[in-house]
Image (cartoon, rainbow, N blue to C red; front, side, top):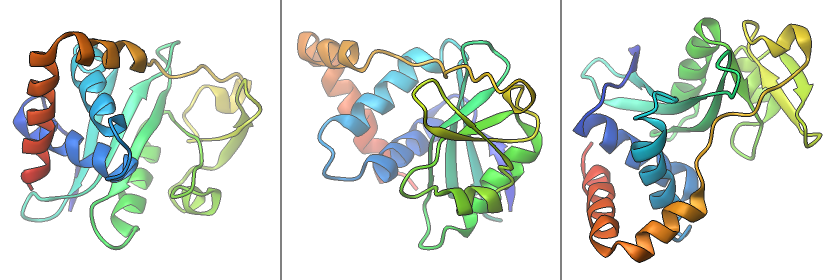
Length: 184
């Protein structure tokens, strides 16, 4: 197994679609499509995000994580992460490897609780500007300063407006998303 950064192209788009669907679920309305489209058209072109995968020996993705640069350009936030298997072990291995190499910041959630993140090498905890606990890898600059910079983001409402105003764009994004889900 190996950890790789997915390069631009159909494979990265397919993995991004699978990640968005895995994180947001099948009953989430347009949320997975908005995350997919905004990341593809706004974060990736600005080189503000990278999609990482843990691949098996046949090159099949077992776990995926989207890392987004923070506003200072010094750290990276894990904004989406999921295993594509029944077990969380592939996700633990992916996040552990990334935590050893990158200045990661990860807010805990229902699937990424603090105990699990600790197993992934997230060793420091600080509060963000909303008073929420956030886990840091040891290289993250906020691990020493305690000052956390939010990740870059896109306006989800603007993506939704574009979907409504440009039917052809919406259909193309929907088709790319569905095609990505069918790959793998």
